[in-house]
Image (cartoon, rainbow, N blue to C red; front, side, top):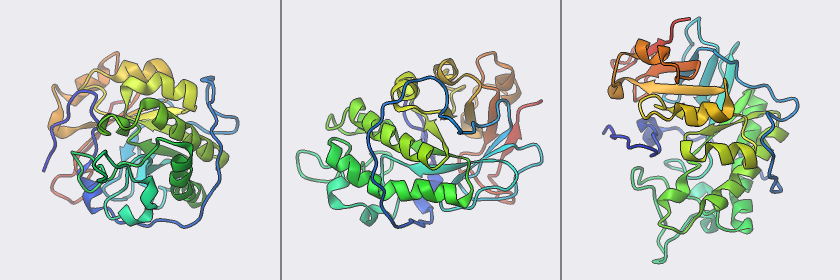
Length: 285
């Protein structure tokens, strides 16, 4: 089914229901580090400003010649010859990966039952409420991030930063912010830039206190959220718009003064070329 996104709600993809899991083993000890918002960490390369992105979470394929930035799932290889971003679900389980996480890392309500994302019922929320549970989550996710670096990615984007809004009050923004800070530290330690995924309303605090370097946003133009990201990250905002939600022609959206300079139009399923739903349109240069 196609979800109808709501303002400030996470806009995630149908591909996740059929994603192939290739988890990597290992553990990493990390410390909480609250970074000040003074640009990227030393030695970290940011996505090229004003580049042409492609979002390939639904399947990897050779990008078009004009593409300079490609986002792919952590189970895929990075695209050669372009700036490559590795997708990691940092705050919820992926479909089929419930058993990858220790039981104590799965968030439970007062009834003792695991809390699942209401829009994605095969994704359990991860428990970020204590330092011990965050450390257990990091022991699983850190090797994935480090694996992205070993595979040759330039950056990592962390999804579901706003899972606390779906926790029924069990989690707070500060709980997720603490885990986000640790994830960013792991990414920087591996030589990767760290990207905030969606969560427009938290952009400033995520950059200032967790140290994110750039943002990946879905439909910030449709939902009039782009300035919330560009005010924080400047030219380092990558926006993906979708064909099924356009309020006006995409070329007009590209020309909007509030639009990020790095923007692409894709189909909601993030299909591959040859699929009937496949769509890819870049902004004129």
